[in-house]
Image 1 (tube, helix red, strand yellow):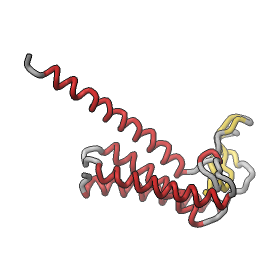
Image 2 (image 1 turned 135 degrees about the vertical axis):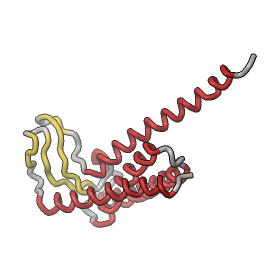
Image 3 (image 1 turned 45 degrees about the horizontal axis):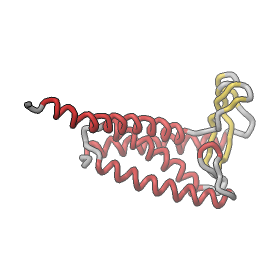
Image 4 (image 1 turned 60 degrees about the horizontal axis):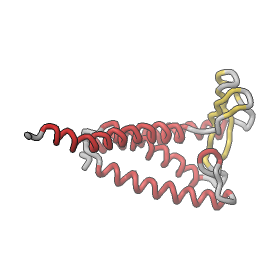
Length: 174
């Protein structure tokens, strides 16, 4: 079970991601248009996109239906992640940071879905020429980086668990 100190780290990460995501989306919504604004040549541009679907513009029908389906899925994911946080050992700082990033990003996009029927505000566009990655935001970066870090942590835990019986058997007297 996570201690107050480790939960504090988790909540600091969640809060930082939510605040930075919210502020950058407010600025993007107020100052950007759908015309790309070059930041690093054509490789990185800023442009306003409202995405009512999930990652990569995945929809489940109408924008209204997608909004509520993906909002519900995000809330279920947050409940599962919350359970993982409660079960996390206080010494597992990387796991808490990863969970904080994923939760913070999920909350950031949930806030957008609740705030507007237009969808999640995306504004970072990366690519070369006509080959572009789907437009994304700070919450998406946090979810992606947190999910990768969490996958590495869980993979390492799985390897340690698989290796533990073999190590114990090797140490047992013959």
